[in-house]
Length: 336
Image (cartoon, rainbow, N blue to C red; front, top):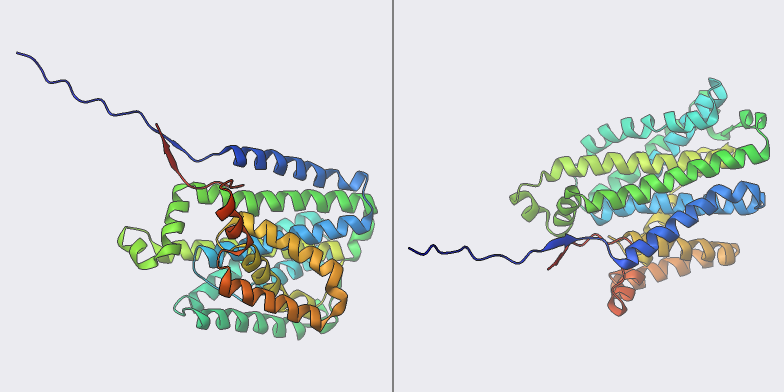
């Protein structure tokens, strides 16, 4: 009696990496190495500008993760960057802790603050959630302005940094910036390539459908909110530590949210590549046209509105229509 042989299925593999992704990874490693080498050959003004750009990228990527995937549009993320920065100054200036260690320790502050904030606002949706985050940021700013322990509205100076030379300060800040980019950009890429990335993508496209497929939307949104708060806090701590000065208007200014929204909308919401493109555009626009004040801000607002209406995918969305070469590939392809 002849036995029926089972039909052999063609062997397939799941591929997520691409040639463009490998090239981008090599270029990224080179840029990180260049960042770490800056204190040994670049001027202090150049280092400050690079640190500022790195902080823009980190804050924008955290907002992109929050709004582009979790569906939580916040205009009050400056509450977390400001709180973390103030805690850094308090630990270093008032308690004598090494400033660079204080930056790491300060990350507990935005994480702790994010828990009750999310508990208070998670029932709100859309514009109500956005307004709620802005109200929280304003409340934190007003509290800080009236607390004498942090010198109230006059702000604080990080005088303990004078124990380090200019080059030592630059080395410490550049190392922290490199770690920040690895954590925010690299961490987001790792997350989106994991099984949680599939859940995030499903939640971004349709939260109701994702929940029906077993995705715990509420828990995932909470975790993303806390992670975005910590990443934003790290950027705020590094930025103001490099400036050696902090005041409530600077720490909790609404321009931080405006910068993040502009970068993400121009570059392309829901993509890491878009954040990098938008950050570069904003940085050079600010360097070249920032002196024009209100006119410059109006132009940025009009440009953001134009992209939101006619280029929903941002500049990166336009590029992907021309060539399919992702820098951070997250799609899964079946290859025979």
